[in-house]
Image 1 (cartoon, rainbow, N blue to C red):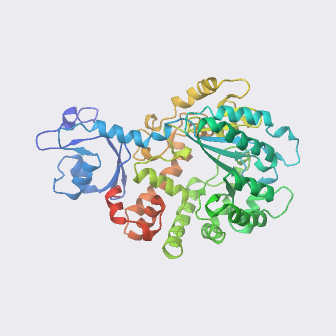
Image 2: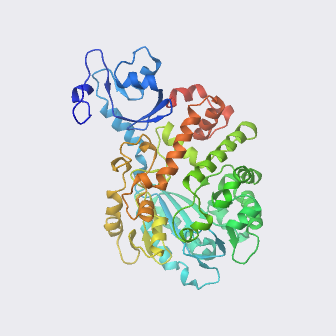
Image 3: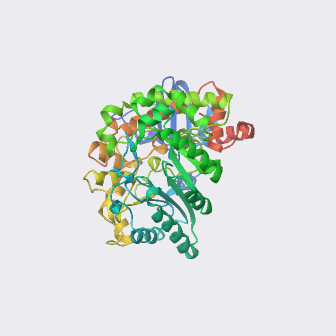
Length: 507
């Protein structure tokens, strides 16, 4: 029996003697299979017949899937209260919000000696005025605000432009934060995002003394990297970065040096060659990253851009080759897949801002600009440079900590920053693994709430989620083991897959 509005009456959901009742879940049909997820992100794949039996309450208690559905909180067949357990597990999943802002990005300068075709920043030439550099007084003021964060774990990330063009400010921030930390007792981590073109003994010694990790950019083989990341002085960017990656690895250790690639139209032709370049240079993983719709990248979109369908095709080809490498050569994870799989198959949160709900903008990340301004994210800083101050939080010299984080910009972000409450997300089976990203939607759709039907962010994640689920539910058991080894950060030989089968979501 159904009502005129095609919704089942409440009696349908009540448990009768000998029956089970539903616990909240969402689902998505994938061909002959149905993917289910619940409030805490537990997931399961049923075939169409099993799903029909489950939803019509005729699934046999002796069915193997019945026990999994019960264990994974999709059904209950007793009078116990499941809400307390679900709320406890949901809190664990959302515990990234505890402690407030953890990632603190310092834009030391917008001067840069590179001319990347996809640059998000409003860069200035390296020879430009030092007025584009963060003064020492401003650096200290930003550090004082940062140390107000209640989080016990603080990551300090140096960005630019090229941050080593303002090495004095970088050193001051490290030394002053270490001084203040004598009474604050926080766990401080430092990361410098650099093209490594200015890498020398002075910087090596300072980074080594203060455990500063290096994140650089490597877009692929020589010709592709030089095309994407031309040096403003016309020297070969590829040769410089590869040489200095090796020097940094030698000085700081392999695990302290990582690289990112950004996909342009020209990158689409080289999915295997890009991966091979990372392997050749002893970089332990790769993060396949799409273009972002900010800054100069917007102006050059016609020449370097592509459709989201083209990116997803490139991503699949890259991931298939990476899995081949893991099968035949060495352990080598892909970063974005690993983050998604951790959210999908473990009870633990991740720190990646783009996939957080409530949104990480402002809540997990703060950006301190060279001129004293403070932003909710690096993307909101780009919007300001493009003439839109919507997500500027305040200024270090003009506003208190409370004014910065309780102002209108943060109130707007909070109001549209929970994916579970957004149209198009609230009933999506993938919402436990995704994020709201209101600043990206504001930039691309002029609406922080966003329209999921036309969202490139949504199209990208949906395509990748679909593909990862197909890998987990396919017949390739070795590929599944490889994905689990990425999640567990261990080699295949160290992976206790019997334990994994107990833990994982039965995809």
